[in-house]
Length: 346
Image (cartoon, rainbow, N blue to C red):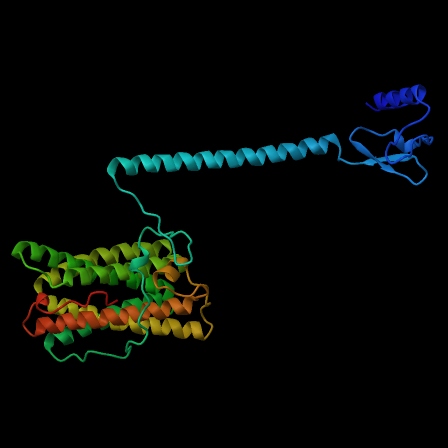
């Protein structure tokens, strides 16, 4: 290629004595050929004060250019593939939804960003009532009250021995148990309502809300703590035993069942208070709050673990009040449907 440039340039010198205005050179002026004039392709010239010109490098070597172009083509190809996959996915979802007539509406946060959760919607979120009295305690008076209180105190002994001050793992175990009573009570009330053709007074929904709220506690704690295999095995065992035992207990004595849950919630408040104490003392790192907790409890974007434990403790206090209240209704010889349920009272 360099030979072609040289030959063309020399041929021009032979056929013309004068050059017109080339590269800023006045007509009639003689041009001075410098060594820099014989350059490789892909260069450009720059005017000089003496009327000549020189060539300088403009582009990188052809190899580097080819590599750069190949990289750009590869990136574009990857983007095209991703876009095609996304379009195919949307098309498949549209086909399934359109066939059954079920669509997920486009839901956004207050800031306009897309809502990322399917397990709960924005209208199911709330701000915890932190003004609730955490020190309330039901003094056991009747025989059943004392039985319930002693049962809960006995259950705490193996828990303290096994978990000690590992409150993250303790909370995981606690929530897998705490989410059972509301589901069992709501299910049995639902079946009773169907059998007797009676309204439940809103208690079915109230108890199921409690179970769902406890489950969200668990989903939050799982983001913070990863249980070991033997702890997962323990969860399966305890849940299986507790579910069946509580099912039978609720059939036999709902007032005793609700009283036991009320005392369990009192113990949960104590455990979360100790959890907060270790965080304040620096024994447990105050890590950033999980995204699911920020959206569910409408926490600030910069919320920390301490904020999460605080709102969970407030929820447990509300569950304590609801279950002691339900037990009091039964102790008065009435049915739950005769008293309005505390709906939305987390």
